[in-house]
Amino acid sequence: MPTTSTQSSILEERQKLSKVMPDIYELERLASQTRRDIVRMVHAVQSGHPGGSLGCTEFFLALYHQIMKPDAKNFTMDGNGEDVFFLSNGHISPIWYSTLARYGYFEVSELNTFRKLDSRLQGHPATEEGLPGIRVASGSLGQGLSVALGAALSKKLNNDHHIVYSLHGDGELQEGQIWEAAMFGAAHKVDNIIATIDVNGRQIDGDTKDVMDLGDLSAKWKSFGWDVMEMDGSSFESIISTLTEAKENHLGKGVPVVVLMKTEMGEGVDFMMGSHAWHGIAPNDQQLEAALAQLEETLGDY
Image (cartoon, rainbow, N blue to C red):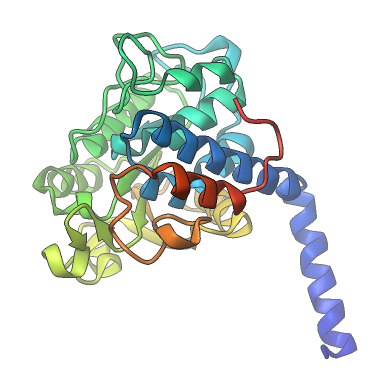
């Protein structure tokens, strides 16, 4: 049993968290519904990438609902006067589409069109369909950091003090363009960007350590001149507190910021976790039923 002093310390910590994170319960409910969206979208067309989408659910929901809080009803492509986000590993589009829909960028019912002909919800996010919330086509791995750095520099030139956020896969770091961009960001002191790396240790062909070992990512990014932070991608508390700390105390000092986010591919669905196998395959009917049995329907399926 915890001692009285320990209980008091835990209570004080929870009270502190409740002041800055009052909506954790609602975010957890939304996370369960979002994961249902992901597996149902991919199952419906027997195509897509559920593993990384499930693993990054807490990140997307925390980013939109607690960190950026964008104006979904007045979306602009230039993003002037607001924080903006770029998804580099665009194959995890299911989590982004669900997040955007349930945040209010478009009707939740449109998730029914995922990966179908003439849909705005393509397998990799695109701009020609005019889907609100998407500012650049992505999914050609390695390019997103260059785009995000360009947007961050644009904000500096326009005297716009808002922040650019981006997300990248750890397997994506095997692309050389990432490290060219990393050098550029540090050399040009792009200090209004927070790039997050989804460190789940998996990629389409296996574990990253077996395909091309990434080594010590913290040491690598530090050697490229970036300020490195770490967080638990399965914890809303960790994500919100880390990104808030990065925003309030690490930016504006002449150094770009990267956050190494530990996640588990397939988080929330037990048989999808612990393996790279669910990087890019869809569940069959029985697997969908098993997955949905683990995910509470909290806000209503689309």
